[in-house]
Length: 119
Image (cartoon, rainbow, N blue to C red; front, side, top):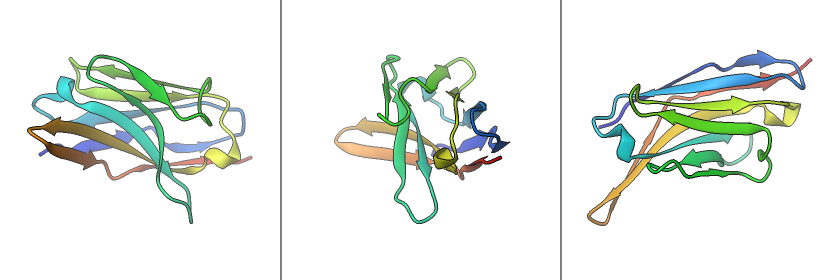
């Protein structure tokens, strides 16, 4: 079982920045692909970015150039630095841990942290 706890959300003005953090209680944290997703009211949850166990990163087209995902395996944390935020980035942001072993997918979610971009 993996527990994920997000932090760092809040209210920010358009053009501002936020840094989200996710602390994981995973025994083999370094083996998980870690990701950030978001869900705006009335919309489906969507991928923001992920980082593999090997450090490969992938970003949603809408976020490229504005966000950076990073992980610290020694601290069991994954961070999302978001810059140039716009009102359309307002959403609940969720941390995700994914692993696959012996043909079985393991998928864990945090409780989410609210990001509101407004003047």
